[in-house]
Length: 411
Ligand SMILES: Nc1ncnc2c1ncn2[C@@H]1O[C@H](COP(=O)(O)OP(=O)(O)OP(=O)(O)O)[C@@H](O)[C@H]1O
Ligand SMILES: [Mg+2]
Image (cartoon, rainbow, N blue to C red):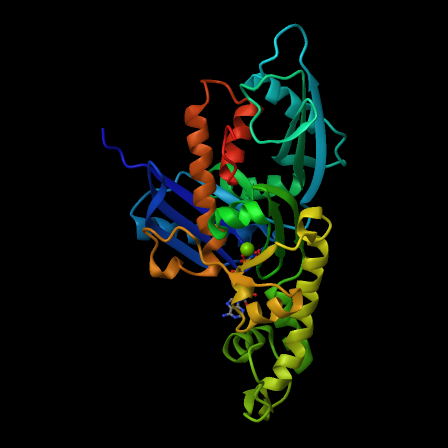
């Protein structure tokens, strides 16, 4: 009866679509069995903009992952993003009636249901419900009220809303590729699981995933998500600026960026780098100083905007807040130092935190969101195992999520 348990993560990025197959043991995803990663077509800024090209990319990524793992992929935990996602704080109150005072899982379900029952903007649905705090008879800071005595239970939550049509298109894409969707996960929530240490989640941290089309930000403090937002800006904007600024093709601009752009140290104003301008025969030259003068303002703009948006949650304004960056855009040489100067605090580049069993290829900040999806999926699957048959109580979900973002049940 030693059936091998596996889990599959799919990152529907604008730059690459990646599929990762891993084996599960009792403590989480352990051994990587296979990876498929292909350039993404038909997905822009997190949205499906060309269904057939996107489907083709998904097919190719899945095939590659199946080949390298030797497994047939059936169902995936898929990471999604896009600036349609909105984080809205909400509250619920539930008064216990009768003589019973002990808070039950049903009471928690009920108070969360109340917190979720607000009028949503047309065309949106609640994709995630993230508890921030429970308040029992005006005593706040309660992480899991089940089993405690009290008469009036309040819950503070962060609701993550996504646009239904956009999310349905992501589901359709995966299903058309012949796969089942275990869950569509707002990507930064998964990324946080692979990128952040528990101490960071407790003391306060801003996580920035700088992708091609989007920069996602997640603010966590006291083990709970306080704010999340997606900015429609990323590495592709840097590439486009180079393309326009130097009158070169997007492909050439991307190459130039990967090979020659750096925000680190002294800038070289001497060495001549050849470029091929659109519609011109003769070779032209630029220096690294010119490239930096084009790239730096865009990076600065993106980081400053992310910082500003993160400040809308009170927790980010506190001194202790650290910053962690990941995603392909964070690989720009010198970016962490640049961000650190800008934010006046340490900035850490995060490769996936579980290193056990990960191949060297995956020890890369580009794969942090993908590995995070494995962690997310593992926790979801564990939660389903522990739920009573047929029961999908919000309270049970909630406690699973509490655990998944570093809160300790019962404390
Ligand atoms: N070494 C590097 N230096 C600079 N930029 C890099 C480097 N490697 C990758 N990038 C940039 O990172 C971006 C891709 O990042 P990533 O793979 O995280 O994107 P994605 O998840 O597919 O996109 P999104 O999250 O926006 O949907 C591209 O803009 C690419 O140019
Ligand atoms: Mg991404």
